[in-house]
Image 1 (tube, rainbow, N blue to C red):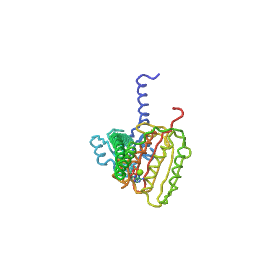
Image 2 (image 1 turned 120 degrees about the vertical axis):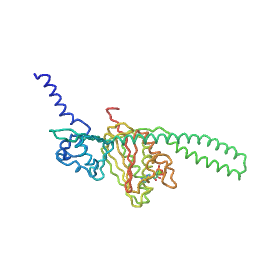
Image 3 (image 1 turned 180 degrees about the vertical axis):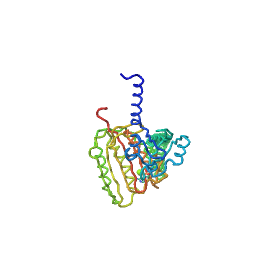
Image 4 (image 1 turned 135 degrees about the vertical axis):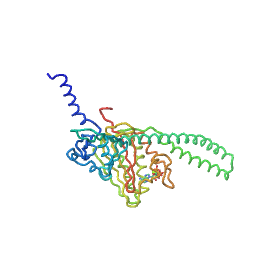
Length: 362
Ligand SMILES: Nc1ncnc2c1ncn2[C@@H]1O[C@H](COP(=O)(O)OP(=O)(O)O)[C@@H](O)[C@H]1O
Ligand SMILES: [Mg+2]
């Protein structure tokens, strides 16, 4: 039997050895030359390098930028003055940036001063809250427009009815004017209806998403005046998804049509599908999703539209209504899915995630 004292010591040592391996925070220990002496598994995952590759390397060799000033670290070794930074960008390799929260403190090992760095990745968190914010903004813009649309629609009905009654009292010639009122009232009602968005509940059936994509492909290929190269890059192994065939088709067609409108003759549009695991939709973790990407090599979304792209009445075209993407967004939401977009000149990608309901949970 071990004495209680030795037992406690053993337990403590056990934990000390095991805990760093379990932490989600990356821990790095630097010696006085600022070279890496220790890195826990979370560091290996964060920096995508094994401990063997990290050990003995100067910290600054790990990044293309200089996320932590060398002077600050040397100062820490001398004065023991710890510091932290809530927004540090690490450039691991070209165009691969991650944002971390950093804590630097000094520790002593073998009677020598060392530096302990704690790094916690925050960009995933940031993305999620930016997404929630965008969603909220979109919801409130939609509410506002819905309210306004209803206010316009009611008197429009009265206006039309009155014009109809009036036309009975008028000569043939004068009826032209009332006809004009009726026509314009109908045009406005039509616009308002579209502003109010889809108003029928979706008819959900379990289907293969490729059947929808193939229909879209057939439609756009047929009237292909710009001689666009349509590429289908499907993952045939995606399980069936529960969706409303017509609505999903409309949602996707709005996106494809936008791409066709902006693209140059001979451009390229790709319809891509993949299975995607562990996605976040509206703040909820979804185990398995069908991902549909519509990619074009056109000029990209104009900068001034990017933030409000999915709002109704946002258009970059002289004769556009700005309703296409807003309707797509509503339709995808009706499917508990997510529509997002990333765009730069030469590459615009709309991504649709549709949750695949697990048989075991439903
Ligand atoms: N693939 C794309 N590439 C570049 N710009 C796009 C693309 N898709 C949409 N846009 C921009 O977004 C705007 C809004 O699209 P949408 O909501 O469908 O309304 P509309 O087509 O009536 O303008 C378009 O006018 C266009 O400026
Ligand atoms: Mg459009």
